[in-house]
Image (cartoon, rainbow, N blue to C red):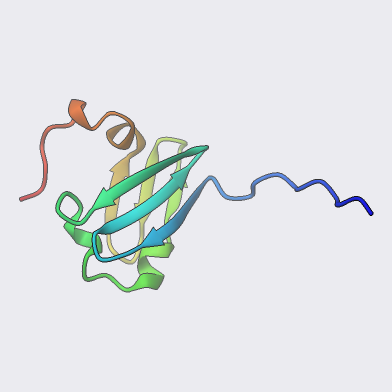
Length: 86
């Protein structure tokens, strides 16, 4: 018996893990870690609200319930974006 081939990905962005240290996000073939120390908006958020993430215009992540917006480029090259929420 031969298994069928897997279909194409239907999601451009996906939350793959949430734990006591931060959130892991899968985006177009790459995985990113968003630690709560740098992204405090997620620390006390409901899991359902963290999972509700949308990729807009191919370069913008949006969490509607949390009113959080992140540039995809800031995840790819954090050194280029030295301003961190304090």
